Length: 160
Image 1: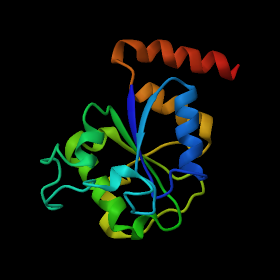
Image 2: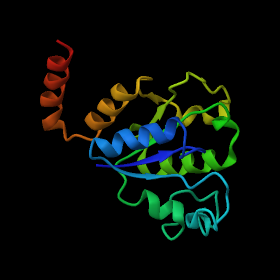
Image 3: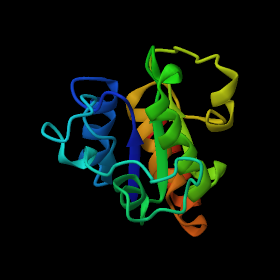
């Protein structure tokens, strides 16, 4: 399974905790570039955005489009300023157009609860706030339907 983690902070943050936990679970992870916006700090910034931000999902040559190629799921990691970031809204819109709402999830571990009406479309599928529970949920979202029963039974056994 391949997951894109969308966050304005991919290092030393709650997003970094999620990325590390997913990698430990054997999930392939792609994530947003460093928040500097500087291609000298993170080379992915060179050409990250689609040429026309209003045509989400149509530019597979930009960095963001290439990052979403082959992604099974997008997880938005909400922080205190996530909903005021134009950059995050562009990523969320790209995920929504490419993956659909059923494969666009969000993790709000600190319960920031963004209230901007313009972001409501991408905050429909919440993950549990506890890290290990969020990772388990992500793993089951990516399972084929035939494997969901076995995963559910495994979760029940872990709890007892």
